[in-house]
Length: 216
Image (cartoon, rainbow, N blue to C red; front, side, top):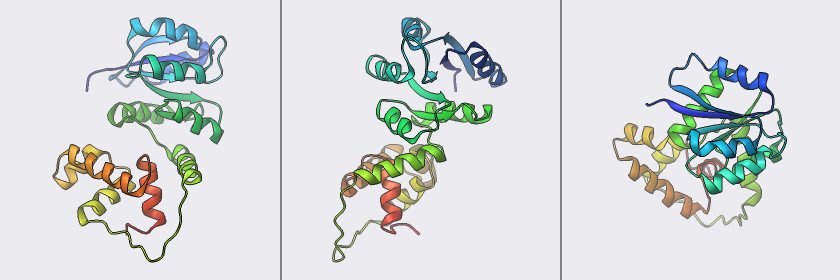
């Protein structure tokens, strides 16, 4: 993989420098931009061309929530990994809906930040246990389920295998390799299951599968 170009937006210079220093040993991560607030980040992002932004939430001038929404609208190819002190489920759900690709706490260790960066580049998202728990609860709250004991959910063996691997957090590419099929076929099966189960994402698939005992 080519070097991943990373920007960091945080109003605390010592914290910014600490993150950059802690990830210095990972040679495939290159910091191309530092910003003290969202407005400064936006003014420099087009020239710096980062792949990922590590984004604080509470910043002067333009905060991380506003900046996430702006980047998602105007620079949709840039992926956003929230890095904040706010351990609040309401923030997680709102930020993910606003275009963030992952949510990390500032207390996390450098290895997890690196893992988050790599996963976001590889799969589009970094879903740790904290985020998974929030999204599953959020997805459950949205679902309107009318139980019908006479109806039976029938899925094929291939669909069941894909669903089982999704529940184990394998990516489409990894599932394709394990099943010796194309990643496109995996995505098609996932899309078909999401449509059938009336869920919007992989988290919804996992919750539906567990709730309805579709996997062993």
